[in-house]
Structure formats: structure tokens, C-alpha cells
Image 1 (spheres, rainbow, N blue to C red):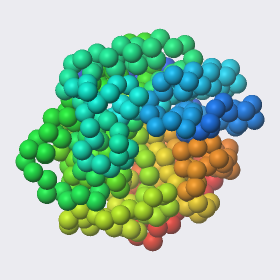
Image 2 (cartoon, one colour):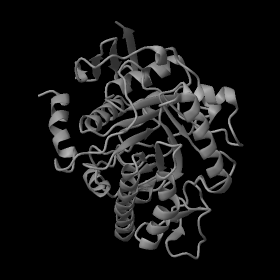
Image 3 (cartoon, helix red, strand yellow):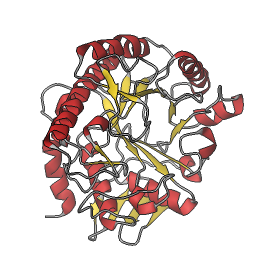
Image 4 (tube, rainbow, N blue to C red):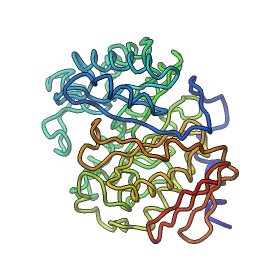
Length: 399
């Protein structure tokens, strides 16, 4: 039996159950447009009109933090900037979806150390002096849902919310050993599961208002392994994909899964080095197995009805083609792709328009096929795509 046939069988178990109907996005989707994504920010204030027109060319638009603050939570002036930009972009782009960023783990500007539900980041990784939400505390959940999510659900100028770092508190920072104590492992596990339940409520609140969500997760959703996480910084997540999907209520809640650093270990093009790896990690730089498994993981998710949003870092057109081709192996309706450079990964200056974005896909003529141990092929009405994970190259040919 081929690997992709096994993937189809797996997709039956990826969904938590078959009961209910998953909420679908309300904006139009067309296979005649390449599903390009822009995910940027000015960093100091409003984008100018030229930048906004560029942003609005993309099929899916996300605005992140808009000032040089540490919180990235969208409070105060950040919230005003994000809302204003979303309104202007909607006016320019028409019916294209516009999302805004909200941090899902750190709560630097929301409340102080003394609050019992915003505890210190004891792993001392990203945002070393920052604090993390503790979603096990219902007071924290109610505050977030009422003060953050409810306002976004009622905002007429956005189509959804990007929630970052939703399960990071359940994982281990890359330079720490996976051999953590049972107490620490149990604490991380309980925090990650509580986060899943909180974001399930947040997604449901948005869906009820006709809006969608993007969920950024560290752990891959296909299977649990210490060797392959979706970002190189964090490892050894203490929850399985099935447990997190159950917590998110994935069968009825409508959300897409975000891939940061898509094909990271293949392209070696991300802004940060991979750093020391956990014990027995077989997915080092230039890993053909990482490439193969990441494509298969994305196929499993989209086949189970969970769209994906992919962000790669592409310092060259060759790198861009490889990133885009690997995404096309898994693309289904409401999945999107974007690639920025390695110097301005999350800011406007890192994004350019690629010729491929002007090419229509056409409907897929079949699922991706694994035609060799590391070679994927897929045909669309207008494109034929090949990815070679062993030699790290790809071709996208117009039909």
C-alpha cells in the first residue's frame, strides 16, 4: 500500500468524530486564482496607500503588530492601527478576507505578575521577561474572551483572527533537554489542553459571528513524535494531535492551521538558526524525511477538512518555487500560501509579488501522488507540479 493511501486511511482518524458540520468560511473561493497570502506589518504605524494596494492584491491578508511594542497583543494604539488598516484594505480589496493578529500565549501588557493567571515564563525562551497566560484559570479565560475575542467578533472590518502560540506552553524550548521532570511534563500537558479548550471557545465565538480563525500550533496535528515539530524552536510537546484536536472541537469549529517556517529544515532559509536539537532528533538541516513528512502532514490535515495557511521564508526564486510546489501538494479550498525573505520575515518589506500568483491553478485533477520514495506529483487543470524531497528541487509547469 502506498504512503498516500495510508494517509487517506489516517485521515479518518484525524477528525475527532463525524457528527456535526464544520463551520465554513463565508468569503468566496476560486481555483482560478492562486491562493496567495500576505502576512505583514509596518512596525511603526500605518501602511501608506501604495503598500495597502499591494497587500490587497493577495487572496488572503493578515495584519500583525503595528508598533515597536513588546506585547504583540493588539492593545491600545496597536488595536486602532490594525482596525484602521483592515477597514482600508477591505475597501480596496472588496471581498478578500482580512484577518488581524492576536497573541495566544504571552500577556505582557494585559496584566501584572501578581495576577494568578498570568504566570512567569519559567523556560526563559522567547520573550524572556514576558508572562504567559494560564488558561487553566477561568478568570483568565473570561477576561480574554470578553475583552479580546468578543470585540473582534463584533468588528465589521475583519473576517477573522490569527491566534499565535496557542499550544507553546505545552512544549520544550529547543536548547533544553526533552528529559524534563514528570511534574514539569504534567504541568505543560495540563496547560496545553486548557489552551485548546480556551481557543475552542474563542473559535466558536468567532464562528457564531460569521468569522473564521487561524490557529498557530507548535505540535504537528498528524501524529505525536519527539523528532518532528512544526517549528524548530520548540520540541517534545506533551499533548498528541488527537488530544489537541479534541480540545479545539475540530469537527464543528471552523479554523485553519498555520505553518510557520514551512520547509524550514529543507531550505535552511529561515531568519534564525535551528540551534541544538533534542536527543535522537533525526530531522537535521537538509532533511529529505522532514520534507516528506511535512507534506504528508499537510495532506492529512487538508484531507480531513482543516485548511492550512503556509508561511515560508524564500531568499530566492528557486527557494520560492520549492516552497510553493510543496504547498500545492496539499492545497484544498481555503488554504493559502505566502513567502517572505529572510531579513524582514514578518514585516511588509519582506514581501514581493511573484509571477506564480498571476497563474490560475484550476481544480485539482487528483490528490498528490507519491511516485517515488521522496517524489510527489500533482496535476491541476492549469498546472503540473513535481516535488523531489531527496534532491530538494521542484517544478511548476503551466499546462
